[in-house]
Image (cartoon, rainbow over all chains, first blue to last red; front, side):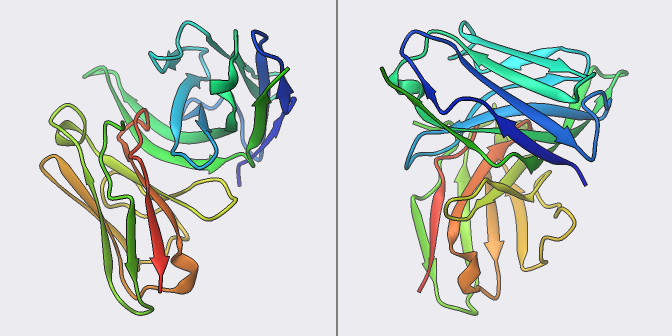
Length: 129
Length: 106
């Protein structure tokens, strides 16, 4: 059973870079049928997709955050990471890492996703000086 | 404002059947599948339904999903107190979430 363990600081100063890591156990970040995502949730509000990364290193980012987001995967450590630069108070939220299955149909160049079925425990990140 | 629209709240009594709706457009729900997540207070979301109506292993069959045109629905039958949670619909690739519906069990 795949499990995700998040790590990273809970307090980041404005204008600095938020960095979080998610360690995968019971599975592999190099799996060709799984992708890894980051989602965030401001206090009392809904979920916001930040982006996803595949084992190949290919990424998709939320257009509203794209200029500040970098995701990476380290298959040797079985980890994937999020970096969000130039943070402001608006980036204060609970950040979740998550993983889900997918299938790529090379004949139609189409992706089929099966939902995010494994989640980390969440990390509360506060942006404050 | 979310791309997917959900009612902010819903309620029911134990044993009742409740439905939560999710409205989108032809560019999201209309052309692709829908996922549903349950978020109990203070916990991470949990996948409840994927690809419109599929339940992951371990999810009770009291939960069911459907889609028609540009809208989708989550139905919970035999409502239980432990179903009190926030419910979110999401697009096929989870890049957009609804605003969430807070379900109260009276």
